[in-house]
Length: 209
Image (cartoon, rainbow, N blue to C red; front, top):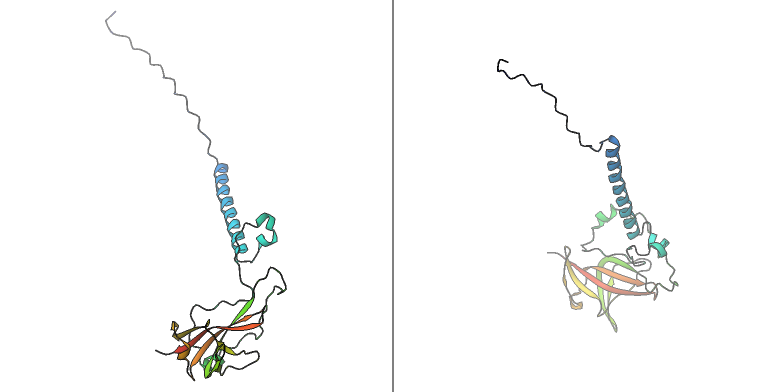
């Protein structure tokens, strides 16, 4: 022997076993996408149902009270017209002639006045005109105006009537002593359909700055 170390034969090392991984397929992505879209559609359907029921467009709570009576629903007084938040001076005659009313017919209540659950029904009217005369009555004062036409009532102001100065929509308190001929006034009238009576609940005296 010459003292040299024989070459050692190199053996290949065994590979490490691979960890199993969950397969990612296009089907899994499609399932997740469909699940999200279904949740969105269900939410929109529930929201639309609540909205249509609340505004009485599709009153499900009235049609199915035993099942959907818990749904919220807006209550609208029968025959009552909402007053505008601010009343301003009426348009001039030339402006009024440029705007034509689409109909002169007033739509009445859709519920019979003899219906027992109906406790009150009324209609609010807002009329504008010029004050001609102030008359004293036992129950208050009567405002005689230039407002004419079929069914126009007497404008009687009582202690329950609200009186205000109206200056370009800004309202300040007024009293019966502030009435004077030739004033432009706005009269808020209420007609009680059950009692068939008129009430003057607010008078606007229009003024200029």
